[in-house]
Length: 493
Image (tube, rainbow, N blue to C red):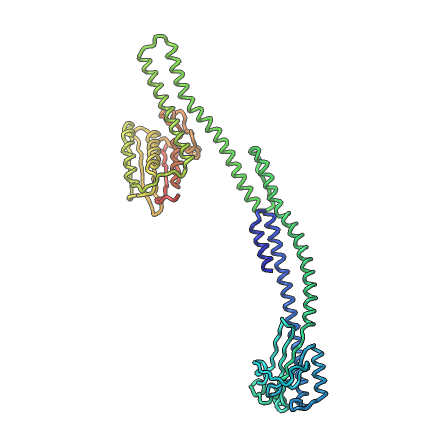
């Protein structure tokens, strides 16, 4: 049985089909109790049958033992009555009876082969001490019962004398072998009936397992079918299979993924459109300027110089857009490509602000830095410098004249926090969820005036995520904005 159950379990583990696993699991759960029940019933019957037969035989043997005393059989009296009783009991139990005297000599053997021989064994000695013993030999199919032959005087003392070890009245031992062939035949019959019943139960369990495996797996097949129908294109209708909680959870996740894919698809189309527009705009401007110069036969030098300066600006703008796009694509493709080192974040921030303060002074914007503690972290210095530069530069660009920018650095035992606050124009609440999207601008006309590609915050967010960090914004329109970056002190790849 153990090998069968092990084989079934190995098949369950090896199977890749959910239906097969459900089928085999139900078979295992259903068949195992039939084996347990079968062997439990047979073992219980055998144990009970042996106990009953031993008790029945022991009672009759005690009676014969008393007859042996009454007829003085152990003193050499060859009683035909006793011999007949011994033969009868031997035939009744299809066994053998030996009468052993106090000298351990066999006085009588119903088989007639051991008379006069000496028998000394642990069981015989215990029996001479007044203890009735019995042993069941399942292999050879018999019960061995040793009955003490107690003298009449000792018998009158009762069981108390035997229990207290007073064994002087034991004059001999009657060793009887009782055949258990009848028990074996009954067990064989029960075994055949149990096997037949077990086969019927296994067939029924198999049919039930097949039906249940089909019914239980059918909802998942409908899920597969519904998902396959989506392969041709994104469906606008969510998929629903409400048979199980598990199928609902799977399809909820799939529908969310489908919705996300639609958003990504729309975002990709919008991104391509924005890229085309952003790249085309400087080219259009340069084309207009160049055509204007070509159309004038004798344009003054000052006009040439002015138009060429404008063309140079448009070229620089085109170059900035391309560089930002390349930086963004590189980050997308090499997410884990970080050159992580132990960096003094305080010193790095001071260096970035030192480079940006001259730009701020042109608009009389005060840039301050506060740090409550010394912060050292595992970061990519180039990318972290770019994060700080982008945030502070935006805070300067979208600020008012005579305004301020405040940079605060803090840390706990797990991560450091860098916040960049300003007194600028602020960000409308409706736009705050979109400002990290590529080419998104809150006020396109104003953004166009101050320059920029609309990719800075997207690049910044990607760089933060590469550090396993997070970035968030809080702002009210007209009251400035605060960008907060949180990065782990110890980088975990």
